[in-house]
Length: 121
Image 1: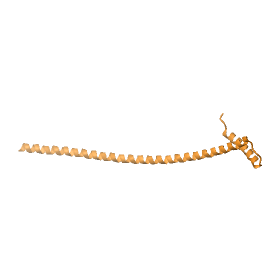
Image 2: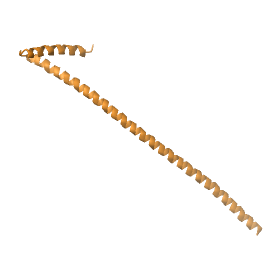
Image 3: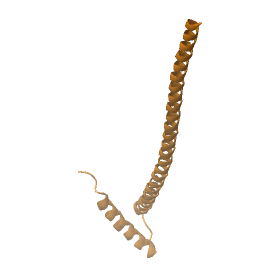
Image 4: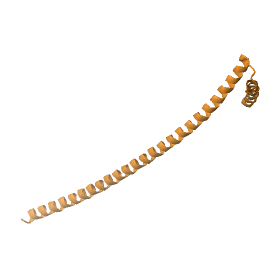
């Protein structure tokens, strides 16, 4: 069975309270009682560090989420630019196709006129 933190915290709180009452009454305390106060101070310090660390991690997570959102927005903008470039290439390809058809038709027409002119001369 795992160690129950609540049980330990309650025990330590009670022991620390007893020692503090002794100190408040002007009584001396033993090294073991001093260790209880030291242990209580450390557990309080760790609890505050835990809270600070959790808050810091939450802030870091929120900051990273914001940064990822910005990166996603930039990626979407880049995607839109690539789509625009694709459209431009499609337009250019279409123009080249039309020019090639027009050029071929013009060449055939001029060739036909030249051949017809040569036959009638």
